[in-house]
Length: 350
Image 1 (tube, rainbow, N blue to C red):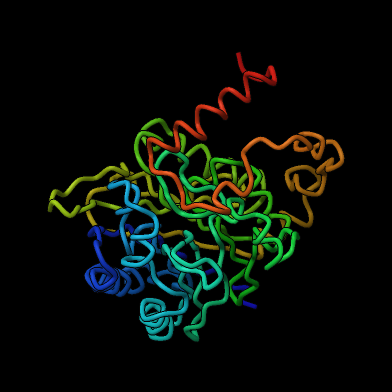
Image 2: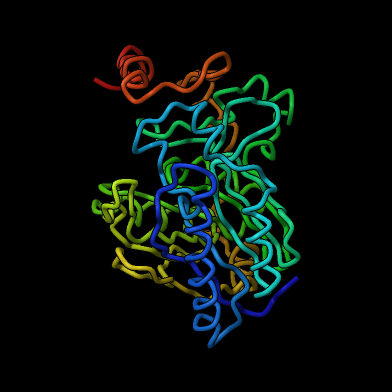
């Protein structure tokens, strides 16, 4: 296990929207050049051992922006894990002797014509050592399946333990986990990782207006502080759509937060390809967890009390067990509005 400090890099790439799998090659070429530069310059003080590619870096956000039919996207744009794309990332991992954390819309062999949003980790041998299936896709926009959308079948496949939802990879550079994008809007996802031992969490990407309102930064710092772990949160730069228009709808504010909630690496601007770096000091994190009397809060969780909060279900499980995900208008009609009505009916909201 590596105990010396090392550098973590969050790439801030320009993204080209894909319309078919072959288009991913354009993004891979750009990401490789950016990785090569980031590893060289980012390693001037401590060697770079970890590189994070933000959500959307490979495929863009075609399904969300264009409200695409789920099955069509699965057939034309979703990838397999492992596959050609992760083999290419694995080549970079071997070349630069780094771990890579990344994301892709990916197929699952048990669910034909469906895809999940998957965060994954590739080790310096080029092997995938972690797959995390996004639990909370962005509700009004994202068409990816969540394990919760097919909960009964997921439980039959993987069981009902926390590892089925919040896996953590124990690697030579620390314990790595994923709570990408909207997942970190819910404190429970960070806590699920922390109770699995996660020390470094991948949290990226987050769009406007959530970045302009400081929600992104507040959440990143709170999730790190609450769980005594690092949070890597690079946000993409500009986005070129199928109409060849180049925009920045992320808004920058890429950060790396340490285990005390302090921002230790930040880059405020977006729009142009670059990267953010920070030093990862695992011994210091582990001392904080194991010697503090107060600010290592996970040791003091009163779980019996908190469990009572979740005895009544809120968001519907198995929503897509027998059908593909709704389009945007259908989702508002069949999910968003009924959920608001549910909170009112229970007297929680007025």
